[in-house]
Length: 216
Image 1 (tube, one colour):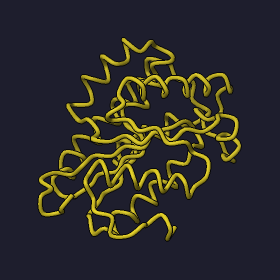
Image 2 (image 1 turned 90 degrees about the vertical axis):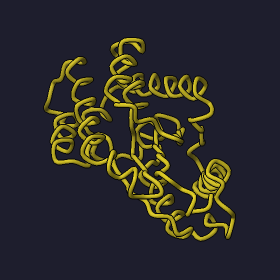
Image 3 (image 1 turned 45 degrees about the vertical axis):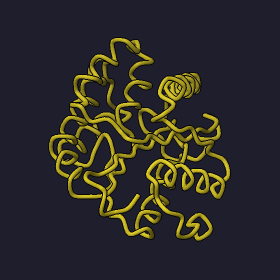
């Protein structure tokens, strides 16, 4: 992809169960785009706005007992705030937008509790037409993923059976949307970086000027 031909940012989201390595991969993406001289902006969902961060704190606080319907509405509220306040502007200012989670998380996490059909209707309405160009789904064993987390929040503290269901939910989404969602096994970091670099270059026609994965 030649930079001068890019008219709007390409929107990339990172998904996966708890402890799948999203934060680490986002650092890799940032370095990859910097090395290839592309501008980028990183967001997280929920979060990245004053309102969104307050909602995030409510959602993740273990002291809070939240109705499954309230939980869905809070996630949607944080997302619409992010879209309206930040994403709609950033999409025309940068070459790439990277977001730690987006509506696929809601489809899996809240879809598990409320049913996928009900949840998808709400997600479709309140995503305001914002759809990722590419979603990188990092897969890992739930038990191994949770071992990587020291201080677990309200969501991370749920039973292992919940996290296993989430993993199954992500598999179903990847199967349903194979062109957008690319499944990457979250095991060896070097192999993960190589696979993601390959996906990025092919998806966005980025010329292989060098192998960034060797530098990380």
